[in-house]
Every structure is written in C-alpha cells, then in structure tokens.
Image 1: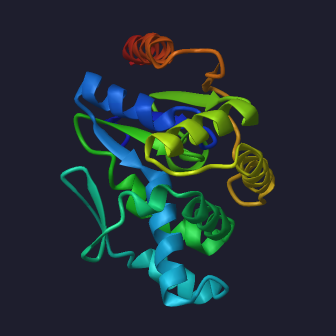
Image 2: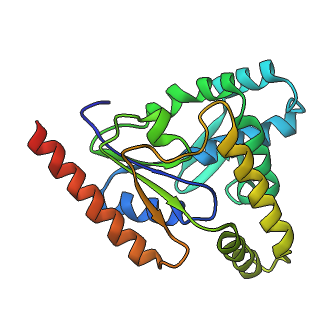
Length: 225
C-alpha cells in the first residue's frame, strides 16, 4: 500500500466531497473509495436486520458486509441501494453505527484494500487521520451548516421531494456534533491536510485548488525519495 498514491478527502456531508473525488479519480485515472457509502450501507443493513442496538451483531455484520460496487451502483446483496443510502434517515444511521469502535476496526482493513495501483482517491471522514495516515496528499473540505442545508434542499427539490431547511440544518448540526466529538476517530482535519472551505467556492474552484495541492505533494515526495 505504501507504494500506491493515495489521495484522501475528508469532511462532513454536504461540502462537495463526492463531486470532487469523482473528478479527481477521473482526472488521475485512480480508483475511488466512498467510505461513507460503506457506513451508510452498514446502517441500512443493520436496521433491516433489527440489530442497530447490538454492537456484537453489528461488528459481525461489518466484517462480512455483503456490499458490492458494480457499474456505478451500490448493491446490498442483490438490492440496489444507491439512492436509498443517500437519504437523511440513512445518513443518521451511518453516524450512529460509526461511533462503535469495533465496527470501525472491522471496516478498516476492507477500506485499506482499495489502495491499488495506479492510485486511490478516498472520500470519508477519517481517511487521512486513521485509514490512510501515510497518504500522499490529504484534503479536508468544510462549509457552514447553513450552506450545506441549502445545497441539500436544492438537491431534494431537484428530485421532486419536499424539504424543510430548518429541520435539515438541525440534523446537520446534530450529526456534526456526534462526528466531531466521538471518542473513536473524530471528524477533524489531519495536521498535514489542506483545508478548503467550500461555502463560497464553485466546484471548479475547489477542483483547481485540490489538483494544485495534490500535484505539489506528489512532486515533494518524488524529491524526498
């Protein structure tokens, strides 16, 4: 894994991580890991099985999570859950299971196995701090809760769904509180990460900043070697 280029992009939901990571993976021709999807699938599977309050059963499920990434789709066993796991309800389930230390440990090796040549772009909350601490380049995206809630409302309305911005803002703040203050792998920027506040930036501006940073880190490593 140490010889493979790994780019980590951490941050809370709604800051543009998915958009950036997809572009970076395409730009560099790297593999892509959506670690948040793993936790969302786990939360959904745990609810379906009625084991959300059973850490032992949850950990066992995490070790044998029947998830597959096939042609842009996310499959839980044979069920296409690509859209289902993007709901606010499932996001809350993901946050709930993510605070359990044994669950995170069970998923750690699974995530690290994604680091294969020619490289990997890893999207998550602790990619640069826990999963890939020796990553080639680390980024941390952030944005205000209000901006993130507004983005989510627009996304839902584009899907023809109703959305209450006050409720979504409240849920975002509560999730941030849980994620930033959990004992295990709290949400925070790695010391050597570039922090980008995307509140007032376009996706193109964020992408340009990220590429400049990644290229600079790769050059620095080449000279170090």
